[in-house]
Amino acid sequence: MHFRAIYIFSNFMKFIWAWYMIYTLSLNNSKITVMKKLIPFFLAVAMIFGAFGHVVAPEFYAELIPSFIPEFAAHLLSTIAEAAIGVSLIIPRFRKYGGLAFMGLMIAFLPIHVWDMLKDEPFVGSKAIALVRIVIQLLMIYAGWWIYIKHKS
Image 1 (cartoon, rainbow, N blue to C red):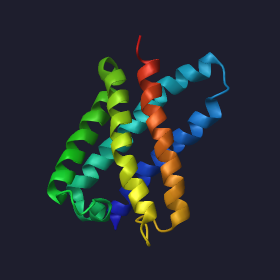
Image 2 (cartoon, rainbow, N blue to C red):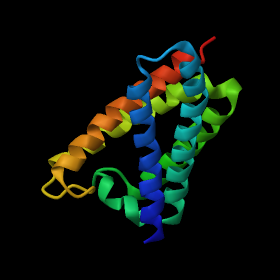
Image 3 (cartoon, helix red, strand yellow):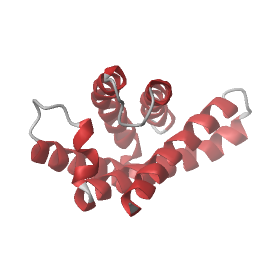
Image 4 (tube, one colour):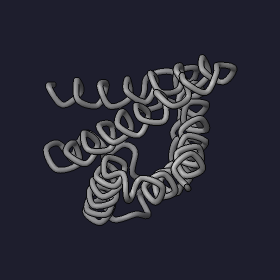
């Protein structure tokens, strides 16, 4: 049960980012500078919590793994990818690459979220929540691109 709290926290961090991104789209450069520093950190924490979750409670993610993908391989690859992306988002030198990797991972996870939404009983509870999760996933894809662009120079 405690792992569900970690999963919710991880998704809450993503939701906070999505809200903050929408809020700051029209703000001045000083606010964008603050955002440029905070967003990678929030997403890094979410990625590291996700990696930790795959190790501590892999059965929690079992419903999200399509039957044609070996479960152990999915957990192993997700753990490595999420941990590496989380660390790269924290280290300024690697942040732009972390942004691209984050975007790639979110693109890779998007079909799984669509597949989950099309199920009779989505993992997240209802089809409406599953649809909101897909919208947030699209914002996460943009977040990776945004991090890359803002840390390119």
